[in-house]
Amino acid sequence: MSFSSPTSRAQRSRRILPWLLYLYALVLFAMHFVRIFDNSFWGDEGFSIGLAQMNVFEMLQVTAADNHPPLYYLFTQLLYHLLGNHGYVYHLSALIPYGLILILACTVIFRQFGLIPAVVVSTFASLTDTAIMFNVEARMYSLGAFFVLAAYLALHNILHSGKTSDWVIFSVASLCAAYTHYYALISVAFFYLALLSLLPQDKSSFKKILITYCAAVVVYLPWLLVLLPTFKRAAADWWSTFIPSPINCIGFFFNPSWTVLIFGLAFLLYFTAQAKSSSKWLFAPDTIWLLTGLLSAAGTSAVGLIVSHAVRPLFLVRYLYPLTAVVYLVFGFLLSKVRWRTILSSILILGTLVCSLPNFYQTYQREKRIDLATTQCLEVITPSQDAVLYTTNYFLDWTLFDYYFPGRVHAQIESSNTSQCFTFSDPEIWLFMEHALSDAELNTASDNGYSHTNVCNSTFAEGPGEDSFYYIYKFQKSANTAP
Image (cartoon, rainbow, N blue to C red; front, side, top):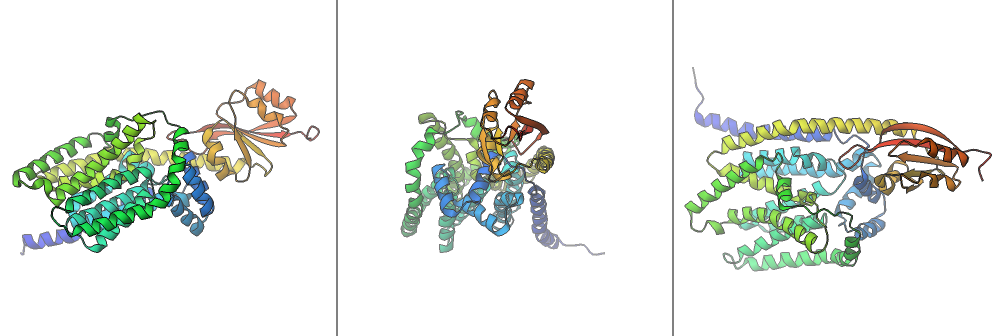
């Protein structure tokens, strides 16, 4: 009888672990991939879709006026022109960056930091409530998260005497992040500050830092010149009146909420051990890198809160999403270095799976239900090219009518004033109402020469976090009363 030596068992384990990680990441990706084959969107996604279908010049004008950087919309335009006008194409604009985050976790993060950080990033970038939303939502958040994470990984290499290629990757990734979301610009600005920590140890790094800073200014300046004239107008028209609290910002990163306790414990254990091991621990590259990641999260939150209190509410906690993968990497790194790493990481991952998978399943079922209802509605809602569409819902009128019924005239109306729709003598009118029309309202239509059909009462498209239910009517002008 022969027994394997501990060395051979360890070697087999090292060979198997990467494949287990790849399989785990592939399963997570597949869980999101199956969600993209729907045609149900909400208003902000409709805005992205509308910009994707414009030419580049029109898109740049609209996104500048609405105070959004253009890179995500350029990316979505590319997908639209390559693959066509399909619902899954727009979901791919979020799924592809999420897939790239998983690839970074399975390659760069696994090689440089080990299994625990790779699994932590893969799990939390896939299964938190916000990840479940933004990994398929046709918006810029997952793309921003990929670029911020890539810049942060390059920063790690730079702080550890990185090669010229690391500086190039850092510059490109950070500028792409800045061109994806303005709060991602604030986040990577803290990474640029961290470069200054190289100067006391390496005077020769001054040239590289200067070149990196100058490149950032030169490349971003053209868009900054576009941004500034529109910022005041956009701020004046900003819709939100809510200002998050610091607790809201912290809680955004930790879902389930109890995971903050494990993070706090890992933070204390790691930095306590570092302080005991060396008097210069605070200036070590890893310490600077870790604190930069946390400072970026805290600093981005602080800037948003200060601006919101000083000017007007211009900050939503979802603007922190591009930083989530960075926080999870810091989280995983700390866990991988503490004494009870195996126990703590097992509790973290298993507990997160138990808490998050039911929510994922519920979200998936809800999306299927809404998409089925939307598909069934579109089969019976058949407005002619001359039809006029009215709705009481802001999002339908803002962007979704143009996606589902391109070329039709449409407008938003007040729920208390539906009678105005029947005073313009339009031959065909469709109403998408959030309440059933009363007999008095239907009689008004009849008095103005319209016959009506209640086409369907159903969920249609997707509300921001909730179902949108509509009573959908078709009104036809009688031939003998048409002008």
